[in-house]
Image 1 (cartoon, rainbow, N blue to C red):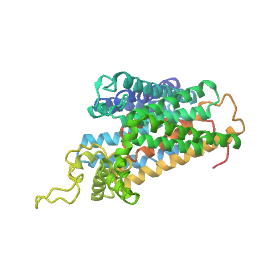
Image 2 (spheres, helix red, strand yellow):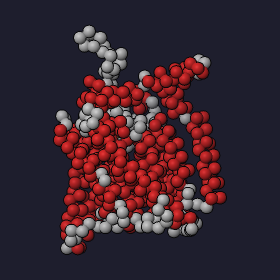
Image 3 (cartoon, helix red, strand yellow):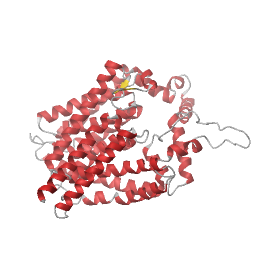
Image 4 (spheres, helix red, strand yellow):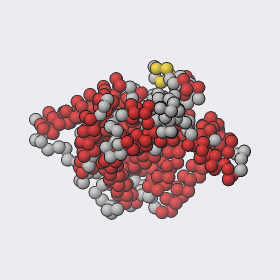
Length: 467
C-alpha cells in the first residue's frame, strides 16, 4: 500500500508539473480547449493525491511546520466563490472563473505536498528553463517573423502593425507578464545561489527577459520592472555583509539608470507608447500650470480609466456580493457607457463605449471586487496578505542564515526560492493594477507553484530570528 501511495503521489506531482510547464506554451491556456484540458488534468492530479493520502494511512505528506494554515486560509474564499458561481447568470463563464481560483489553489497544494524537497527543487529549475525557452522563442519569433504568428496561429493585426512581440501569448502585455516572472527568478538565482552554474543561469535570464519586455512595448510591464528593482534593493541583498550590500545596491541603481537611459534613446517605439498615453507631445507645448491638468484630462479619456469607471459602476450595483464570477463581460454593455445617457430623451451618453469589447477590466483587483463584492475581496486579499508576510519571514530567515556563510559555494535553490516567490508576488500584484495577467490560467498556475515551493523546503525556514 505504501508503494502504491508513493506512485499516486508522484503521479499527482508529475501531472501538475506538466500543466505548469506546458500551459504557457499553449497561448497561456486562455483558449477554452486549452483551459478545460488542463483543468481536467489537474482534477486527475488531485484524485491521485487523495488516493495517495488514503492508501498511505490517511495522513497527508507533512507540510513544513506552520504552513498548513496558509492553504486553509483560502478555503473560505473558495467556498464563497463556489456559492456565487452557482448563483451566476451565465453558467459556463462563472464556472471558468471559479475554476481559475480553485485550480491555482490545487496547483499550490500539489506542488508542496505532492513530492519531496528534491522534486520541488527540480520543478523550480525546470520553471527557470521553461521561462528562458519562452523568452528565447518570443525574441526569435519577433526577429524572424515580426510576431505575425503566435505559434502556428496568425497574430493580432493591431499588435503586428505596432511591431509588438507576443511570444506564445496572443497579447504582448501577457507575454511581458511571463517575462516579469522570468526576471524575478533570474534575479533570485543570481543573488542567492552560490554555485557558478546556477548564478550564470540567473544572469542569462536577467539579460534575456527585459529584452522581451521592451519588444512587447508593454507600459505596465515597464513600470513593473521598476517595482521589481525596488523590491530587489530592499530584500535581495540583505543576506550580505553591510559593506558588500551597500556597494551592490549602489551598483544596481547605477545599472538601472543606465538601462533606462539606453531604453529611452534606443527603443523609440516603446517610449512613444508612454508619451502618447499621457499626451506628452502636446503637453510640452503649453505652460506647466496648464500641462498638468491637460495630462490628467488625457489620462481620464484613455481606455483603462474608462474601463475602470464602468467596473466601479457595476460594483456599486451589488457592492457586498458582487455581480458574480465571470459576469463582467456580460454586464459591460450596460455599465460601460457613461451614465449621462437617456433612452427616453433619445440622448446618447458622452462616452458610449459601444466600439469596445471588454472581456476583462484590465485590473485584476478591481475585477475581483466587481465580481465577488466586498465580502469576496476581503476573503481573498486577507489570506493573500498572510502569504506575503510568510514569504517575507522566510526571506528574512534566509538572510539570517546566509549572513554567516554568504560565500558558501553550495548555497543553491533553497536560498533562491523565497526571494523568487516574493519578487514574483510583488510584480504580479503591481502589474495587475493595469492588466489582467492573473486571468491568464498558465500565468496564474506558474505563479501559484512558485509561491508554494518555498514553503516545502527545509532551508532557511526553521532557523533565524522570528522577524
